[in-house]
Structures are given as C-alpha cells and as structure tokens.
Length: 244
Image 1 (tube, one colour):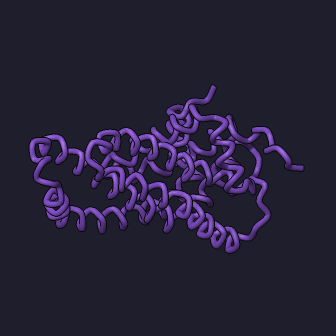
Image 2 (cartoon, rainbow, N blue to C red):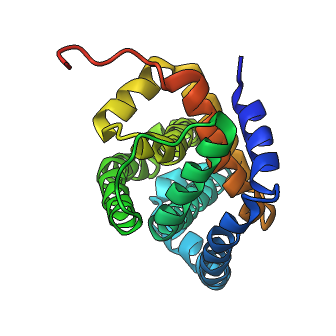
C-alpha cells in the first residue's frame, strides 16, 4: 500500500532522474524568487506586526500575555506560510501540471487523459488555481478571525494544522487529477473518501514546505508523489452518484 511518505520519497527520486530532471529547474527558480522576496519582507516587518496585534489585546487579558504572544506568532507564521504557498502555487501551476504529466507517463507507462494543447493546459491551470483560491481563502479567513478570539484561539494552532494538511492535499493532488480531466468538485469528493491518505499526504507536504531552502528541492518531489498517490488511491474511486 502506497503511503504519503513513500510516495513523496519515491517521487523525489523520480524527478531528479535523467529525463525528468529538466522539468524541475523552472519550478525551483519560481519558488526561489518568491521565497527571497517574501522572506525579506517578513524579516523586516514581522516584529512590527506582532507588536501591533499585541497592542490590541484588552488590558484584562494582560495576565495571559505569556500564552497569547506565542499564539499570535504562530498565527502570523501560518498567514505567512499560506501567502507563500498561494503565491507560488498560482505562479508555478502550469509548470507543476506539466511536471505531473511527465511523471505520470514515466511512472505509470500511460499518458494522462488530456487532449488539450500546451498553451490551453497552461491557461486552464491558472484558472484552476483561481478556483482553488476561491475555495481556500474564505475558509482561511474564518480561521484567521478565530485566531484572534480570546479563549477560542487556543484551538487555532490545531485547526490551522488540519486546514494546512487539507489545503496541501487539494493543492498538489489536484495536478494529476486536473491532467486527467477530474473536475474540482469531483477531486474534493475523491479526497474526502480517502481522508487518511489525503490528510497524511497533505500533512507531509506541509512539513516539507516549512523546511527552509530544502523545500525548494523537495516540492517537485511532492508533485511527483501526488501522481503516485493519484494512481494508487484515487484514480479508480467510484463515480459520484448521479453521474453517467
């Protein structure tokens, strides 16, 4: 049985083999550029952001400042993480989709069920990313609000962790599914039918994205791992009720 860790480890080995290696350089360059820009901004402004939000804490909660401060820091880090992820996903989506296609051909011996031209596939990939944003951002906004509600925000780190895993599962497992003409709604249904596989894979990718610099070279492996997960667990999922 293919596990999330096995898929990502095997996928990382796949993408750096001769024949696939050349499809990895462009996504790494995109991630590196975004990483440098956002890291510089965060380093220069993070202290001011924490101070600003701590000043908004009512005086009667001063005795909890020892707990509220680290929660604020964790929540701000989560926001930075989501910003980095969403920006890189939006910019690099066509490249990741193309990489997923090549991995599927090499790993499974068959091409995705996609007859679109390269240009059309790239345009559709950007549109698909906007659909993902429309799904993810409202839910992230709700979590962001919860993160600043005293008392309730004690659950915020756990909720962010689960949401991060689900978001990563959607973001990466969607590449091979989009290549195989699986609709966004059907993709989410397939992921929901395999909650352990989906969340374990998304959780593993989340951990990868938090590893500075190394994540630039591991993310292409996560894309390849998504192809292996798709083939092992989601390709033959039953059709939704009412479909032909």
